[in-house]
Image (cartoon, rainbow, N blue to C red; front, side, top):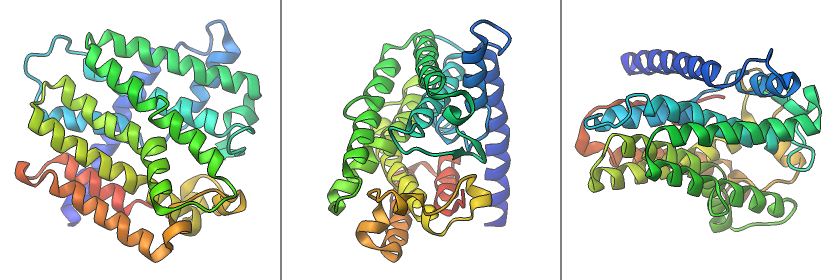
Amino acid sequence: MQTEAVDIQLYLTEKSRLVEKLLDEFIPPSTEHPVSLHEAMRYSVMAGGKRIRPILALAAFEYCGSENLRNDRAIEYTMAALEMIHTYSLIHDDLPCMDDDDLRRGQPTCHKKFGEAAAVLAGDALHDIAFALMARTGSIDVVLELANAIGTFGMIGGQIADVEAEGRDVTKNEIIKIHNWKTGSLIRSSVRIGAILANADKATLYSLSAFGENIGLAFQIIDDILDIEGKPELLGKKVGSDSLKRKATYPGVVGLKQARIDADRLIDEAINNLNSFGDNMLKHIALYIGRREK
């Protein structure tokens, strides 16, 4: 177990650096006009983070192989695009009209630093560049995959459902649907996109889709748990904000103990989807998600 932990941490560190190199390449420098907008974009994107979504895409791509690729930079365009989409969603999620958060990754949120207008536009601009990069992959399938994942039946639909659930009691099925859409859809899609770019067969894509769905839901359940018992210095923000805002959370519906049990079960189920393929980095990423503290 010790060896696995060291290996996955090294992999995540190395691939995070690759993601940051790509982001630096594809986002305009803060010296270019409009300076304030590019500053806001870079401030948010370069603030750190786990880079889990692009790393999952790369790990799935490596898992499936890379024969017969039409574009040898396709996975790099995708990795940068996925992190930009994730960051755009965080910028908008932090706005006063949404979660009204002051801190993100240990520093003032984008709208606190640059103002609400700049934050909205920075998110919009990251969304725009992300889809320009996805188009450069040469694959219509991955463009459609990402568009569907973040649309009204995915991340954006989950966001409005999350907003509308504030202050009221929700059922377990409702919170699962919110989490699957708001968080899980982009994680699942990241895995699928990596596999699609590697020309995965239908059976492999089916298994990886189930893997991505399970870790996506587990990821958000763990986020909910960390908001209750996490360490602010690791999270980069205050704990307990979900409760204060009366947000719908998984522990709030099933209890903290059951939430931990369900998160562990989902990680196990995700790994079981990969059992027939032997040891691989996707398995270790799933284990990492299951034990993360931030």
